[in-house]
Image (tube, rainbow, N blue to C red; front, side):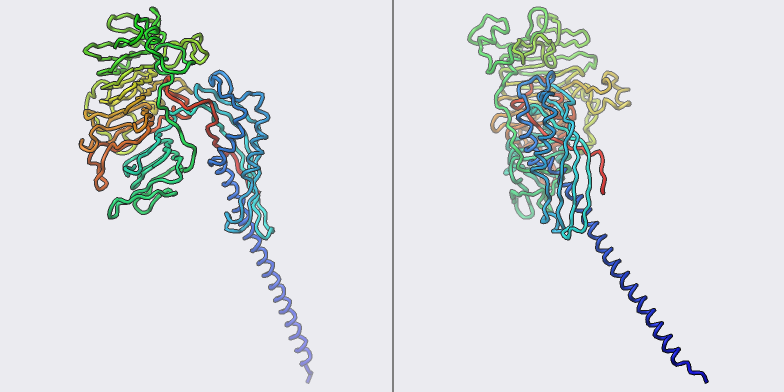
Length: 613
């Protein structure tokens, strides 16, 4: 019998070797796959780190530190005394040298995101490239410059085995201008948060700022940017008794959680409000706006062609040279009532002044560019409207001013109103009732009217104040079919605008204001402890929602309503809606107060492309 044992042993050894080879191959493959898996994890981490660096770069450009760095770089190039509509505040000869300096500033200050900010997974290194700085837009109160940017963020893991890059390209929009106060939807020096708060039911749809003492309770809604010069805000809690705490935070859960759609930035520079008139009286009198100080009684008398020297007789004066309008409307003494009307919707604006038993009616006929004052019923060429339009009479160059839309009252205005409502007005809660206003509210201002009202004393509001045309609806076909005069040419804005300022006192909503009032324009009470008040706010009945479309600027925020268990029992809810035409002072009421010299305002990045490699 043939012996097969040796063959069996050899076969077994062969199979064992094959098995060992398979195990070795499998083991090698597992090690390789493990290493490959680890590398994939690190590559993903590197990509995440690079993305974090890119986000950091964009946020730094918009941060307080980034804005300050960019502003400091640009300041030496800015001519603060230009006519911003006629001349670039940064000379075109400097444009080519600005981009490298901006690039150097950003790379020196914001080039690294450290490991402790990345859960110690690695480091992000960031480089900025700035090119093609240029001017793109000039406005009466602002200018816009642009620059192209490229941000490259390199993410490296701690092992340095994985490196990924992301590249973000876009444009920087750099805004310079006067600190036009009407660019704020809500601006207050002291928000009064120690004694009151903004609560559930309050809605702010635009940029708001308080120098100090923001106060919040519940869920007020802020749809635009919110800033404060303080490092904390006051959050209220009513679980057992009223309690408040000033916190460097965006909320105090669970009961006070405001909605900050575009963030809440603390520690920004304060914004000063004016406490005295600079040019409003002189504008109304057709005087030289380039000189400082209030006009004396003798200067006022001379400007109005009166024979007085020591005191100005009470009255309503339409500044003219006998043939044409050469200024605005000047009023000496208290006004018992001012009725503004554009209710005819026909290009006619009227102002009716009641003073000491007399009535003076000033009629602006925009269709024929003329103005009548009655009594005596005299017509003059031109209209006291808008900013100065005569190129040979431009106040900034030291010449007498031309016709302008300034009403100046050296006294108080006891009643400001428009024609009475023609029917009921019951808008829904929230923003839904803002636009367009009810057809039962006659307009105070005609489409062409650009007006600024300034009084040294208190101003009392007794009715809605709205425009003939709703600026938010001028591209709505259905609205224009109903109001064809409201159409505007392409790429232009509706001209209508109103400003109202009390220099020494409050602007007050009186007890005869109707429910759910609409107040359009920018309202300013900048004197110490002054603001927009509500007469007998704690005793009057609940009157729905006060809708401000434009802006409210105050020294001290006032109490305008009272809640009980979250329900309005006295006064008003408050709804603030920003007029987008006011952004960066593109449109301002004539002679409306503004801050200081022409200056750097802000930079906003817009991403156009993104790639990873």
